[in-house]
Image (cartoon, rainbow, N blue to C red; front, side):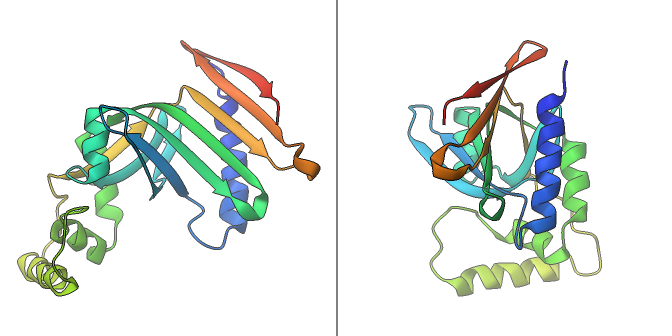
Amino acid sequence: MTTEPFALFDAWYAEARASEPNDSNAMALATATADGRPSVRMVLLKGHGPDGFIFYTNLDSRKGGELAENPQVALLFHWKSLRRQIRIEGPVAPVADGVADAYFATRSRDSQLGAWASDQSRPLDSRATFEARFAEMQARFEGRDVPRPPRWSGWRVTPERIEFWQDRAHRLHERTLFVRDGERWTKGLLYP
């Protein structure tokens, strides 16, 4: 299988990491409910390669529920300063527990504790309630490692379509589309 779309992604991503001032790994994640009601939000890319694109979240969050109900997603990287974007579409599946555990161990301690304290996407009566829960987690895990919460894990998007969009003068943009056909990728151009 050609890895051409992944080599191009790596090149563009490296440029973004060198030039974007904040969160060059930020991507819009579009999900939908089982009946097709869409939702989109920003998440952070935490791993990528020919096997897919990985992000992490609370499994009980709105996005976690939508991913479980309808495991088809779209991703969008938009690097405004580079005048580029990459669109990715495909199915999503949970990462292995070992992969999620290894990534969770690299997060800052406060981020780890926050994952335990947060009921992500659920109503919150006040910021003080969350801060109290965070303090409880600090006390609970004082002096020891913070394990990954059972309701927190990662998802891997296996791309079926990857589009590279490059801005050009007068809206004469350049668009290159890769489509997976079994184990092969076909490459073509799209009108702007």
